[in-house]
Length: 81
Figure 1 (cartoon, rainbow, N blue to C red):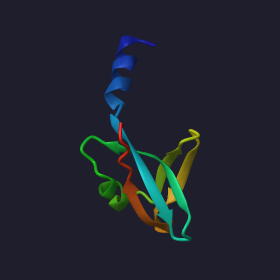
Figure 2: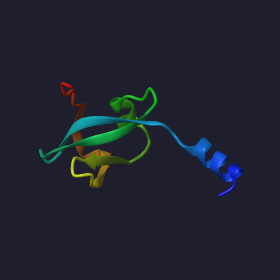
Figure 3: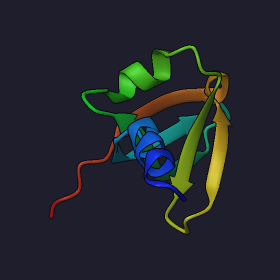
Figure 4: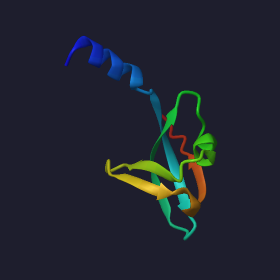
């Protein structure tokens, strides 16, 4: 890979912040995992954006795509360090 291509690819990278959340689905089931937010983005911003599906990484490192219409409640988990 040339220096120009490497430089161009790095400029396309978007820094994301990993946030642990608890999601209660409309059927009452509960899912915990991590969402990835842009710099300065809040969980509520992510839920209200135009994207229909929410990527969620489970603790087992599986990736789920959740239809936001099926989410009843989503809140960050504040775990003690």
